Image 1 (cartoon, rainbow, N blue to C red):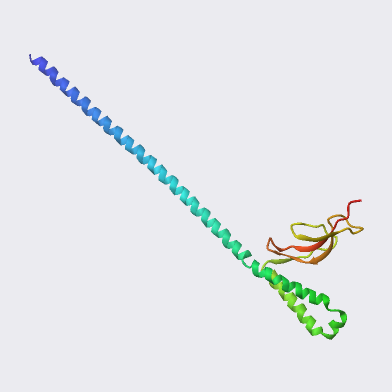
Image 2: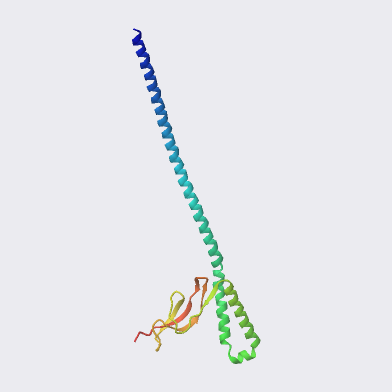
Length: 187
């Protein structure tokens, strides 16, 4: 009878080992599930961090671009307001005839010097004169057609008269040159 008791003891050991093994497997499965959850959470945070980093970089680039544009084009309102000063000085010089130039030479010279200084200041701040010549082709990006007229000896779209010069601020148009354009049909 001692032998059957030995077998019961072995069965108890096997059952205990099996139970311990199943507990270890359940613990390993729980640990694996927890590790998987932590990895997913880590990946989610990494993704959010990378997006936030990209957002910050894009914001920095956008702010830098806006700052550069403000430097370049911030004075465009003042520049636009100064254009009539240029126009009036140019008209004054064009209106002065030879007789008036002799009588008021100092005054005319002062206006010419002031006009040159105004153009120098314009140049320092990136303002360029758009001065089309008669006979050039009309460019709607730089010119504004004030009128059209058929003029013999010209082609349609040729500039036939310049009413006012235009101005660019760096690469932006402040004011288009105001021109008359030929409407002569092609013969």
